[in-house]
Every structure is written in C-alpha cells, then in structure tokens.
Length: 239
Image 1 (spheres, one colour):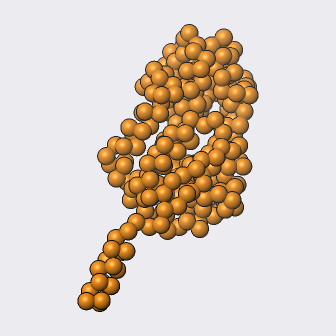
Image 2 (tube, rainbow, N blue to C red; image 1 turned 90 degrees about the horizontal axis):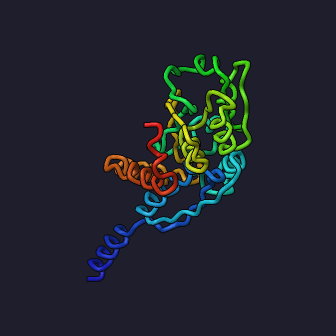
Image 3 (cartoon, rainbow, N blue to C red; image 1 turned 30 degrees about the vertical axis):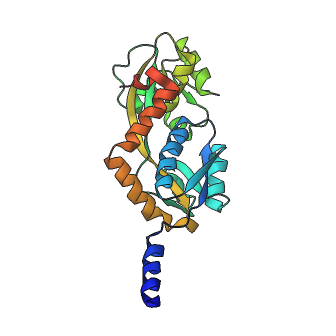
C-alpha cells in the first residue's frame, strides 16, 4: 500500500509545472517595439508559469546589463548584437520585423534602394548607426529626436526621412503632419528575444510556446492591438 501511494505521489509531483520564477528583462527606453515585445513575452512566460519585469534602459546599457548577467535578458534585438555579446542566447521565433522605411511630404514613387535615397536630401535619427552609415550623399542631416525629424520633414527641410517603420509611425502619430507618405521596406531584419546563457534551459520551452503563438496568429494579434492602442490609424500609413 505504501509503495502504491509513493508511486502515485511521484506521478503527481512529476505533473506539476516547473518552479515559477520572475525574470527581469531590459528594454530600450521609450521603445514602442519593446513595449510590443514585452506584451508578447508576458503571455509566453505566463504560459510557462513565470512572470516578467521589464526595466527601460538606454540602448547600449540595456544590452550590456543583459550580457553581463545583471538581468535575465533583453526583450528583443537584432541578431547581430550577439556578435559582441556572446553570453546572450536567441529564442528562434521572431517577435517583430524591423523595417527601414522612407517618409516623405509627397508621394514616394521611385525609391528602391540607398542609391535612390542618396540622390536626394535625406535625414535620419542621430543614433541609427547603420542608417547613418548608408547616408553618404552630399546632402544629409541627423536629427536629435524622432518627433523633431518629423516636424522638419513636414516643413520640407529635406526630401526623405529614413526611420525604422514603427519609430516613424509613432512620431507621425504624435506630430500629426498634414501630408505624410511612407514606403517600406528598403531593408528588413527580424528581432528576437534573448536570454542570458544561465537560462539556457528556458530557450527550448520559449521556442515551443512562441511557435504555437505564431501558428495561431496570437503574436500578430498582440502586435496589432498594441499598435492600435498607441498609434491608431497611423499604423496603416505604410500599407
């Protein structure tokens, strides 16, 4: 009888979920992309019995703290950051596709690549290092904030404003320029959730949960909900 009870207890214990934990993740300051990612991860971690705490940090500080193990990971980043941050492990299901978009005060008809952009006067946000490196034309500007750039564009201070699509849409929703047009993508890259290597066992579990959410279109539904809540009709500007 005792052996039978012991066996039943083992079965019951084995069926319990893994011990619940609280995971602290870093996010870029004032980033709508990371806000969206955090909503997706809140659901994914919740299905594993965990909760997340998200702390906003300046971009470089956020990635350094996660790589050093001061927190448990980053909400999401481009895969290339792992080259210099070898302690981070990627969860394979992308949470967002970063798109390089071209914003203009008039319809964008003939922009297909960087050569087309560099024939005109173009600007981007100071801090978009990759886009900065691509603006090699004689007439290009760097702006100190997304909103300032959008206001300058509405006054036709330059022909094109080159932003990440979502950053540009959020800036447009705040500035509300009279005429604004958008084309995207010139380039696009997936953004992934990453955890510190000390949580390697968590990666396959998150992969499984996120794949199911991707297949059921739950990730897409969360993305659309966050966009609608924060930028409304501007979410369709580049469609």
